[in-house]
Image (cartoon, rainbow over all chains, first blue to last red; front, side):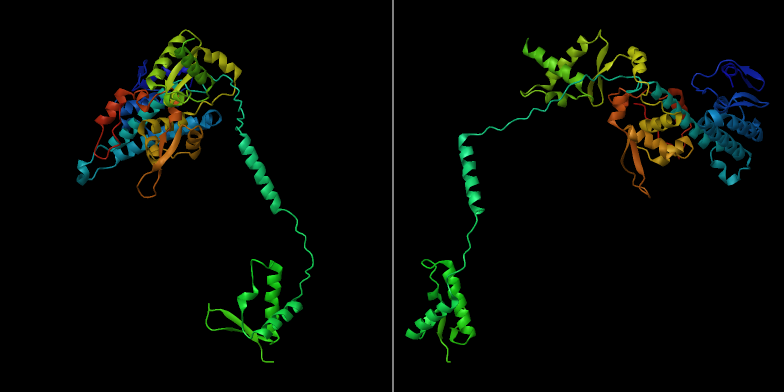
Length: 260
Length: 191
């Protein structure tokens, strides 16, 4: 499993000195020692694919044993590589078992059982090779240092321009708003409901029918007074001293003295 | 200083201070007055020439232009930052290659090529690095996610587009198309 062995592979007893150029054999590759083949498993797969070795000549049990030994060894160093070889060994076993099975004559049109697997192998080989090439490209962060000079991004605060008119407008708004927050002096009312009840009764005494709205003169009377009038009317009605009539909805409402 | 030299300097300084490659569109934004894209392109050529003999060079990648240290300085610079981007395992690189060359692919496609089930950690590493992302779902039962490489991937590998990926091994490609049967794996695209 040293670099020295890498150049020494034996196929049917003949030594191979030169490894094929399009084959990548990782360091610490799984070396297989069989009668028909000695060398890294990567190479074995390669040769089977190229039809240089008959897969039927490979004793799988033996290969499996050597694989298991290899896994034990690689556990410490690089288990991942061992996983790759598991895949390769499994493929070999599948190829071989398919070859050994008798083919039913109906299926004679079917391709060589190796074809599909070989195709997969090639595709994988292709991608493995592509991955190698990709890894050769200088990468940012690993091989490429990107320029980035320091530049202090000062965010300058831009002040809005203000005209004197806008300022005046703003001041007026402040005053307007301040008005709404003024305190109101609330004093106890000097208006008495009783007193207004009397006023109403008196008026009704003069005329026996008075329009309801005539008590509510919004323009001249202050609001509290209107409220008191209203309360007085309600009070009088409740006590049965006056009656409220209306012919139909939205027609004028009249007050008249009740029949006490 | 002439107006045009001023523009050139502005572009240069923008590129030198940017952490991301800047596109022509980005560079146009530097100027209030309308500046032609062709002018910017011309100035970029100028800047590239100016820096030819220096320690940094201006290169174009997928999303724009960036300045980078020449590769022969990497060895030195690396000593300053011992914990740089990791070396990815062979498995990760293989998955990346499959996605890059065969995209868009599903997880099952990747597994079919490699013959082993895909460790979700592998994909996650690539997604976290922003080299790979999910671009949609394949309209087959289960609607599996389709993975593809990102612009960021192209940037990091200094590629302007996928067509600049290294060519696939031609003898293997030929072998594959020779062994192609009806129930085939997709024809590899060389471009």
